[in-house]
Image 1 (cartoon, rainbow, N blue to C red):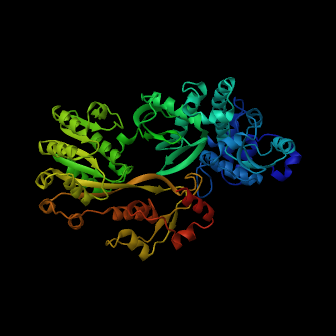
Image 2: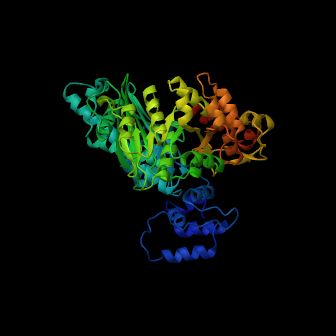
Image 3: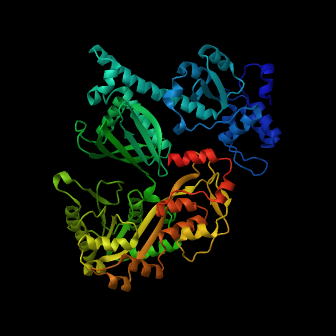
Length: 620
């Protein structure tokens, strides 16, 4: 294959399939037989304008030499970058300033050469291309724009996709602002006054540009695996942020009037009062992912200094079909859980701070309990996931339908299993306990830090000890920890001091090997991808019931539960560390609220990524 040093000998030209295959064979990544078969198959077929790397990636080959890794499009692009002596660049849309890069070149010019600006720093512009031997644009732009252009090689599919998406969203934002500006300028206002107009100066929520912005926003969030979308208005430019794997990322900045219009459209889609901006509102809407799966979004607005802040929580449509093993339950956890749910009546409480997966655990349990002979009723605020096997009722405080009223209503509906979304007050707690005592299995949530504290919390709410000891079957306390990226995690050692800190002195053998974060393109250089639950399950027995009095001490309850087999949260996390699923610092951060630390072992394994690690800590 020609190298970049021989570019002048070959002139301006695009890559072809034959030279790509020749280079792959030369480097031992594929066999001559594979190359010949693909060339033969390609002769006389349409689609010669397709990039050769895309054609090769579609074969789903595995490298012919060790370590026999899949030859996907990113790995092929990285290989090609080395062959032509260009820097490889993986396009991460979350790390690109869309407004800045799209302001460098016009779309017509960028699409003509299929190039995409990906970074702007002073007079330097980094441009991604998939055609290393097409460099006419570099000479032209350097002359006309008087800037230094650095060329990097990127995945041809990513260049094509984000070239289209970045310019489309920029056009929509610009169009929404300029259309409104034109109307305002006709009335004698300038652009500075437009920014200060507030809600009255925003584009119409049904404006075609705003519609496209909202559609892009939702699809972009689905594509990035976001769990929450935050639209936060500021004085001039509002922040768009996604929460991915529990960490917030700044995605884009949008003019505040345009963001206000987008919020209004989302409120309309969520059947909320578009006119009312002074009080918080809740709503929900249904959309579809790029793969066609239906997904539920829960909307919540809050009035702020510069307008309404909107948060949308995205609910994974696959939650209801997840097994408890997928959620992070060990075999012991699953056995203790079955001990509780197999009871004909009683109350099971899932506890933990907001955002720790309590609702997911409850829905997964209800899905497994759902049978034709059972009448399952839920009272929620709001209904987070709709399922045809449940009878779901949502709380409406404006008409006097609160949790307590909902519980009393459900009791007259001949239920077998009842889920109370959350216990917030004494009345709801009393109703839930009474349901459990009158022959129903009740599943509910509460906000406490650990399992034993749940008992004292109920007592604080005014529940009589004799009622609680008869109704309560057990408590599940849980947290979510980020799981290590399987593409880049590296083996490491853990010393005795770290292990004791992690296990809080529990008699758990120290593993010979654990894994630490490194960071790669697949996990956006965080070292983590996805989340998993860790659990603390306290089963009620006769001793615990006898200890439930007005003077109950949570510490005594915790001690007895540990003696009878309960695995505390920290040890549950340590077991995940031993299994190579997460890291000690992640468990300590989640369970004990301690900042992340870097051990000697981690520094030796992750050397060369110090700058990225510092940026990750700053982001988090």
